[in-house]
Image (cartoon, rainbow, N blue to C red; front, top):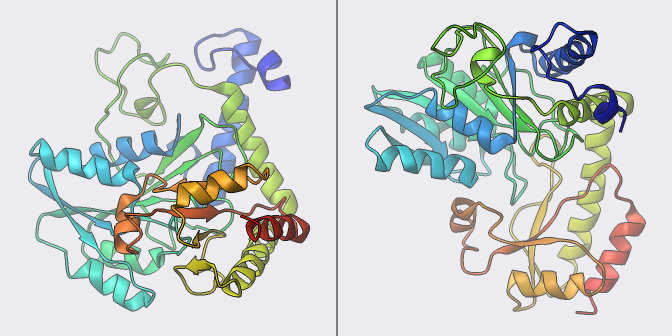
Amino acid sequence: MNALKNFSFNSGRGGYSASVNAAEKIYSVRERIGNMFNFESQNVAFTLNCTMALNMAIKGSVKKGDHIIISSLEHNAVWRVVNHLKNNGTAAFDIADFSFDEEETVRNFERLIRPNTSLIVCMAASNVFGVAFPIEKIGEIAKRHRIRFIVDAAQAAGIIPIDSDKCNIDILCAPGHKCLFGNMGTGFLAVKNDVYLDTIIDGGTGSESINPNQPDFLPDRLEAGTLNNSGILSLGAGIDFIHSKGIDNIYNHELKITDYLYHCLSENDNAVLYCPKPEKYKSAPIISFNYKDYASEKTASLLAEKNIAVRAGLHCSPLAHSFFRTIDRGTVRLSPSVFTTVRDCEIFLNRLKKI
């Protein structure tokens, strides 16, 4: 309520104190994001979500005749974008298979590189199965071949430390509402100084208004239109919460809960699991499973009747389900948070046994 009452003024559009104060607050969130992932503050542009950020990053990076490599587990926020670029004749793409062997995953990416490969896009961790990609090693091959590297950090930003320099990330995209504890309707892309993006959204910025073209400088170039001030400030508050708890403490707690759930499900003869036991820095706190011979939606519906909230189906990631051979059934997804307790898990497990 404080953000809505005190900072719902068009930042960067007015010289009055409320507008200036709002702009300062917004910039402070850019600084927190920049510090967290090692980007210059002015190179952080706010979006409505991670999907918008990925569209801007991918479409703004390619030109006609380019070639793109993505992973076999990508969300539709990547797969549909590159498929659109293929269909309209802009760029071709290939899919690199994930492997539980990190070195094999890296080789799968590198063997697909062509002379015209301009872009590698890879998630930090799967939103369906929780498996993490070796983005530091993939970033190394991208740098060696002078290929732009975009990382979808939707399931990792806020729990798994990400350093853009260490991982050679050119553009990082993330939502605010997942592991960063912000409101829905928030997200960002952060870019390195030498990265230039064509715009896919043009319009008012409050700067260079007489210019018929979008400004060349960041963040204005990538932020056409009025910002979601209260949402952005919630994202800043979420990052403050992460720092107060400690990112390692949050991750360790969530992974401990995930490990407990995995162990209990593995002992339930009616549960089907698809990945090995979660490991630190190789897994996000996510478990996908199925139960008995039920469709995943039926399991979720029966659990909902017992006041258990889980997501079921394809989770906007048919590529991942095709890879793990769950495309016909989907999966039930568990995603514990820092607020999830062992008692919560016990309640879920007991009610699961009754369906």
